[in-house]
Structure formats: structure tokens, C-alpha cells
Amino acid sequence: MSVRRLADASVQPAAFAFNEANAAAARTWIAKYPKGREQSAIIPLLMIAQEQEGWVTKAAIETICDMLDMPRIRGLEVATFYTQFQLKPVGTRAHVQVCGTTPCMLRGSEKLMDVCRSKIHHDQFHTNEAGTLSWEEVECLGACVNAPMVMIFKDTYEDLTPERLEEIIDQFESGRGAEVPAGPQNGRTVSAPQAGLTSLATEDAVLMAKHAAGTQDAGKAGGGEVPPSNAAKPKTDAPETSAALATPSPQKATSGAEAAAAKKTAKVEKPSLDDPTRPAGIDKPATVDDLKMISGVGPKIEGTLHSLGIYTFAQIALWNDEHRAWVDGYLNFKGRIDRDEWVKQAETLHKGGVEEYVRVFGKKPV
Image (cartoon, rainbow, N blue to C red; front, side, top):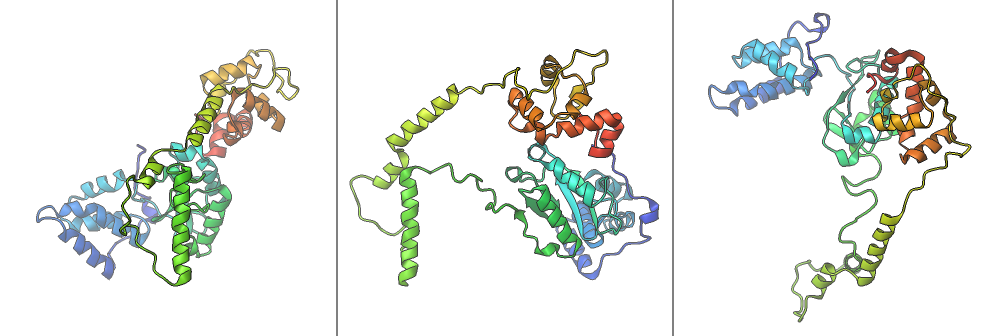
């Protein structure tokens, strides 16, 4: 875990005190713990202080430790251990926490960080000039199905595109952050499948759902009541509804098996090595660039690129749309070259090495 330190003394306030409402909340939290165990309230009290001030100051830590009859060093240990505590001033209108864990990274969180770099500050943990906005990269925010996502204060904003995040940041900057609906930003209902339901989707189940919807609509239209789902029903010799749900239609099962077999036998053909859109290769030079520094290129992919005569960052930096499409098809990457921005990475590394890469992307190459 990275080292976490308190902010410089130049930005630390001289003193701290809870306002009246938060002082009452602090007393309530302390009372939750048995006598002699009041120090267990350190985390909720630090959170209350952060919500009041926007960040956790040195004076707040010391004041809370004194309230709990707790050594100040213990309070410092807690505040510097948990990353939920902001130890430096953050944006007064929005502090954007961008999830950088694997699911979000695979679905474009790096581009969300680029938005933060351009609209807030190039480096995380710094505010913009007005002091209204700040950002940081964090670990999993817990909505992986709806990746990529960010958290602003206590709300999460999911299924984001760079363009949508720009709009959200602009709204917070203008003081209209409360108008932004939290949760998915693409019309998805909570974490429902984007492509629609994939379970209980047999023909009989669909007919039953339509029938139920029609019954409810008819009841509403006629002004009558819709009978409850557990109303008594005539007894029959065989539970037709249960059987229909449990046994898929034979036609459906056959078509599903055929589709699975076809998918299994289908082969993805690589583009021809003689294709004119293939990027030109070169003989192996005396100095070969470490292509593994490009995010998305591992030892195996690097070996494949070498077999195609691709040895340097400069070569990759010159790839046009057709070149990228040919290599993407040859590697069966399904658009990954563009998503990972190989050309931009290669151009940056060719231009200024690791130092330039850190300046542009805000991190060291992998």
C-alpha cells in the first residue's frame, strides 16, 4: 500500500471543533460502545469530521483522540491506514474517485482518468485552480457489472463513457451536482443484463409474462382489481404451468444445440500475410525496443509482433486505421488495440521514453 501522510502544515487549520449537530452525532456514536471501549468510535468520528470539513485535518485527529482519551499516535495510525480518509484538501464541489480495478480498467476507466486529468488536474490528489474539483484512482467500488464507474462523495455513477463523465463533472462544477441521477448512466435498471433477460426466457415463460401484463392492464382499464398471484385456482390433474416452465420447447432445445455446435466448429480466419493493409515489417535491428512496455503486450504477443517484422515503438506509432485493423484481426483481439491505445502509447514511448509516458498517462508503463 502506498505511503499516506498528512497534508503540509501550510494548509492545516489551527484548530477543529464539531458543529452542534455533528457533536451530538459524535456523542451518539461514542455511547454505542461499552464503557472502556469508547476508542472504537474513532472511525465513525473521523468520518463525521471529514464530512464536516471535506477532509481529515491534523487538528481533527488530535481533537477526536482527546475526546476518546486515546493516544494521538493511535488516531494517526487509523487515519493514515484507511484510504477512505482524505488527508489533503479535496474539491469543495466534487471529489471524483475513479475505479481502476480490473473490470473497470477493461471497460475504459483509463479514459475516465484522462477526462479527470484534462478537466481537473494532471495529477491525482490535487485540486483545480478554483479548489472546487479533485480526483483520485481507487480500488474496487463494488459495481463491477456496471463498469466503468466513479464515486463522487457518497454516490456512484456507473456505465460511464468519457463524454458522460465530462457532463457530470461540468454539472458539479456549476453547483448542479444534486441534479445528476446516481447509478447507471445508460438507462440500465440497477444491474440488469444490458442485452435483456437470459434466464426464464422460454417461449412459455414469455407467454405467461405477457398474459400477466395483459391481465393487469385489463384490470386497470376496467377499473376492477387485479386478482392476487396466490389466489385459489381450480385443481387439475397435472400442473401445466410448472411443467411448461420446467421443460423447454423441443424446437428451442434443438435450435440451441445447433447454434452451440456451429459456434464450436466455427473458426476465425486470420487475415492473409500478403494483404496490402498489413503494416510493413523490417529486419531485426541492432537495438530492439521492449514492446512489452505497451499496455496489452505480453511476451507471447511481442514474439508474434517480432515474427511480423515489428520491433520498434516507431513502427507501431505509424500504424493507420488499416494497419491496426489487420494486426487486430491477426491477433484476434476484437478491437483491443484501439481500446488500449497502442499507437498513442508507442508514440509516447518513442518520443520521450518512460518519463514522457508518465507525463501523458500519469503512471509508469507496465
